[in-house]
Length: 355
Image (cartoon, rainbow, N blue to C red; front, top):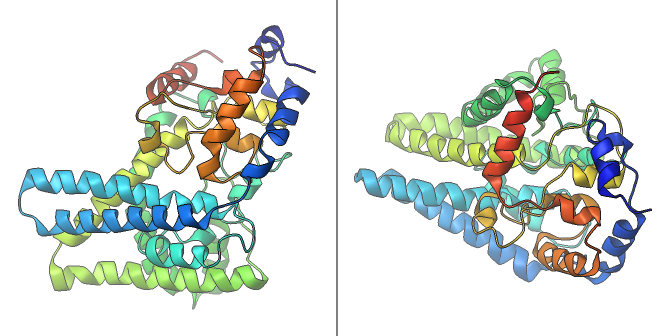
């Protein structure tokens, strides 16, 4: 069954009422079968180059005394490290054995130095993709932002700007304390161990191999957080404050991207795959800046919800095939938008409506 405009309009208030579009789902599966292989020759150079440029620019911002150069280096560091950090999303979808050593390498080079080890996202993000969880109260990455109060959007961004402070407290203070206070440990695992936006979300304690991964990643992030604080006594405040400013900027741009990754219009009911797609956002070419603020394939976020196993480097080709194949009335075309700011404006206007 194909979803046509009148049906989508009638279901706009309750997206869960939108039925699946069989033609779109079938085409998405059939046209992309050979695109699901992650290519190490793309992943490793991209991640390593992004990290190298980011850390070199961060060092430049710390070492220079020229304000203009400091700002330029800081901006370069923020964008490069943001790209490197975005690979955490890929880690949650990579098939076991597809990229040997990549998880360990990413955590060592990016996750621990930025205090966002992959355990904070693994086994969390996959729940966002679960058919019965997306857009519901049990989705760790969903809030009906478009249906909330106008002040909710500025608060959403403000919280992100404080991320480096929160992460230093999480790993530098709470982790060591939790080792000697079991009740605190249980609360930290449940409430402060996930990169989520749903404040009601609670994690289960890790088990097996994942528990071992969690342990060394958390230990590394804790030691790094303590070293950051200790660096003030050896090098003064500038290195720490520069690092925190770059980290804050990186987190804010990611929060803005998150704000426009979905339309955030679901009121809590389970949704079909097509409804999830239509509540999500692609910003494909020719948008010139989407590859910067939505790197590593994140500009195809709606397509990613159709094809979560397709690696980031193949999403552009998958999008081209679907656009060329699907009829003009296919819901696929309605998931594509021109840029960030029109979407921010759309959500902002929605929060101002009467309920």
